Length: 200
Image 1 (tube, rainbow, N blue to C red):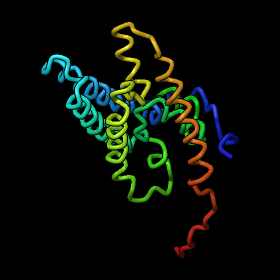
Image 2: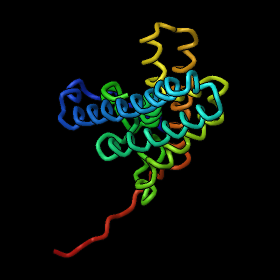
Image 3: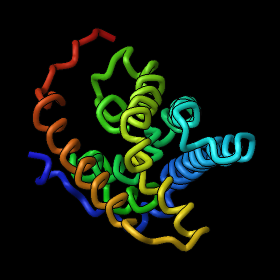
Image 4: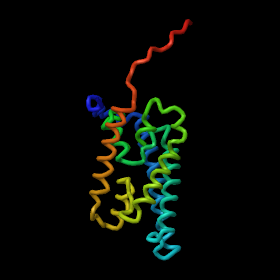
C-alpha cells in the first residue's frame, strides 16, 4: 500500500545537489511550458483580434500546449521526472515515489516514475503532450481546460482574477493523488527478482 511508503524526507534533502538540480530542471521545464502555452494564446489573440475564442484559436492553443509540454517533459524527464505540474508531483508523493521535501522543491506520473517503463519512456513526453492537447480540444471551449495549477496561477496573479482558482488546484491535485495511488497499487510491480549470479 503506497500510504505506508509516504515519507517526509529530511530537511537536508533540500540542500542535496541532486534535489537542487531536479528542482531547477522542474523550474525550467515549467517555465518553457507556461511561456509557450500562454504566449501562444496571447500571440494568437493579438494577431486575430480575439481569436482564442474561435475554433481556430482553440486548435492553435491545443497544438501549442501539446508541443510545449512535449519539450518541457523532455527537458526534465531524465533529471527530475519531468513533472511540470504540481498535481503530478502530488500524485508521485501519494504513490510513495517522492518525499514531501523533494515534492515541495519541485511541484508525469505513470510512465515517468514506473521503474519498468521500458522503451515507453522515450515516447512518454510525446504521449503526455498529445493527451494535454487532446484535453484542451475537448474542454477548452467550456472552461479553458487548464489541467495544471501552475498554468492557471500565473495568469490569475497577473490579472488579479481569483474567481474559481480553487477549481484549478483542487481538481488536478485530487486527480493526481488518485492516479498515484491507483497506479502504485495496480501497475507497479513490487516483486523481488533475484539478481543473476556472476563469477568474477
